[in-house]
Length: 358
Image 1 (cartoon, rainbow, N blue to C red):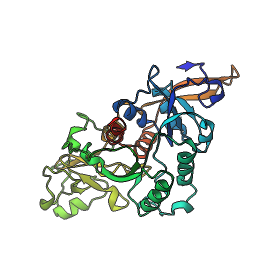
Image 2 (cartoon, rainbow, N blue to C red; image 1 turned 90 degrees about the horizontal axis):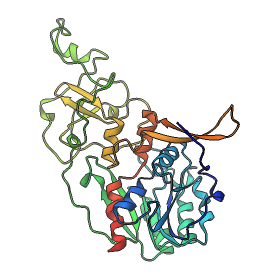
Image 3 (cartoon, one colour; image 1 turned 90 degrees about the vertical axis):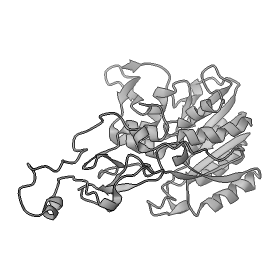
């Protein structure tokens, strides 16, 4: 499918509406747009606010352009100065967590991916009425809060776990001036987000039966390579729980963390970018089978609409016609996992933004 509309990255040809604006730095697939709507901040085409988003990832940006074609899409977050002089109602940013995550080297401001300084500059320069910043739980959170509160004394730092409003354990730090209550626990578990009958090639283990067991000890059977059997110990049998509960291991090569299989009656572990090596969370299908969570299920864990990351609108140079065209293309599963893991939990952001009008 091709269209010949404007180039979203060329903001010079997009007339401003005179409305107050909402700015999303490091917007990703722009689940923040959905949270704004949830909270009554009308950023729809006919709404009271104009939505601007900054993102450099090719695939996340394409998803946003497909889902929110009326938004004004910018590139690098350093381009926030294009909006100087505009009336900014809300500035929201989930700046890159990789420099601070325990899953990485925790280089902080020494990491080339760190955008915390950009965040501070944008907050001071745009002077929004409301702001919200999100990142991983880290010892750096005190420095973030110190820097932000020096610019805006109304800042408050709160910690929330997405597990209260989704089937995923995900602890994050939020610095905002939006007054809000604690999240209410909705009691959601993995089973609530699973697709019926979802099964993919190599995503399951093989059941123990007489056709596989050809003599020898049961221990020898369990240790055979590439059976992909979930080894369930009696004391780990699944019970209903509000937390992640490992019920066994998949017979995969690699770190222990990628072998963990979780009960459908507990929570998923925190979604990451899940790049390569079977890093997707794995769930039991019965006592002896497992499979990886699908991209759609991961969308549900982030409380996104089904299929939010399935397609993207790409701008390409047409070799025959000589000008740029827009093409709607499906997004690969690996890219979907990555952008979902990098994103917000929509329901948490929605809850915080509801405080804007309280």
